[in-house]
Amino acid sequence: MTDNEEKNRYSDEELLEFKDIIVQKLIKAKSEFEILRSAITQNESNDTQDTSPTFKVLEEGASTLSKEEAGRLAQRQQQFIRHLEAALVRIENKTYGICRETGKLIPKERLKAVPHATLCVEAKNKR
Image (cartoon, rainbow, N blue to C red; front, top):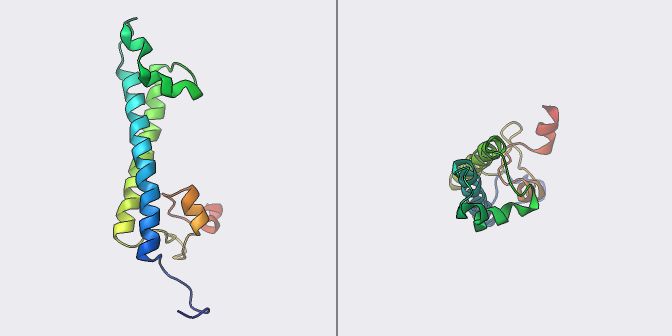
């Protein structure tokens, strides 16, 4: 490829790098989803579940979540998981990292920050 030719897709090696990033994020997202789901389905009683290690993970935010808050967070997490899974499909199809509006490659920096991105910054800003 000459300097004048613009790259139209990421190499298989690059796609594997992105796949690793996405798989790690997916594992973490699914784990967080299960914690939220557990918070939603937990009984209101004061049994041993109240001190379960599951809630220790949520210490960064509120120590306890209302079922409504947990439900909203769980929905967002579920959507994030779907976006990550769709990104894995695009990797398999070798279409990952290509802006769906401009057809140009989305810069690596953007994909590392937002691995499920389907738009380059230029296209995203036009919206």
